[in-house]
Image (tube, rainbow, N blue to C red):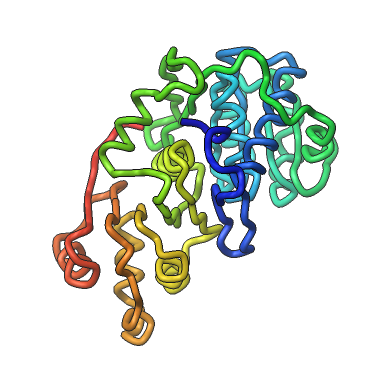
Length: 305
């Protein structure tokens, strides 16, 4: 139930704004190269990787590489201040930090304060203290490492009651390639399969968007990832890609409902069979309007990812 078992020509995910498509074959090759980089740097099962990126085309490949090499991976909001990023990178014990040139200013402000001396890499460019990620993986093997095992994410709280707190759960002992109970539970609950087209309109550093995206890919579906949420664009993507599943927060419902009638009408959303939402209470009136508009496909959940 992993990327190497799916048709390599099928689309794993699309970065919507840039229309960058990544096939399962490309995801398999790039995640294996990243996995070899991690091993060459001495990372072993249970070590940690920090990822501070915008919704970047390489985000999922990096997470998939950590997932298949038994590593903890900590996605960090690119909207945080340098000292906040620094705290999380240090606290999670990251052996590797991966960021992008869009984050160069933030990285420059924190690079001298990283207490665990992580190896630092940058996508789309370089900066003092961070080498090119693309160059680092370019000559790595495209086949899997010989000791694959399941990793998992190590997520941090928002820090509303002091410093953010990491939630570090034991890694799965299910062999890599076997169906993991955690992923299977999500699959069964929401009906994810190879025909799923999932719209992810939120930042991937959040728990639910990343967990849903990784689950859909695990079962061979296609993810449509928005770089930034835009209400009108989200509706267009639902129709354009014949989206079957989506995941939202109530604020997104409010913004879509505020669109002018011409932006909301005439859309073919016949394929859209499940709109999942959480993160905050949804006002009854908003949910009623969404059900009237989209039909009885709105499902609220409370879950532990």
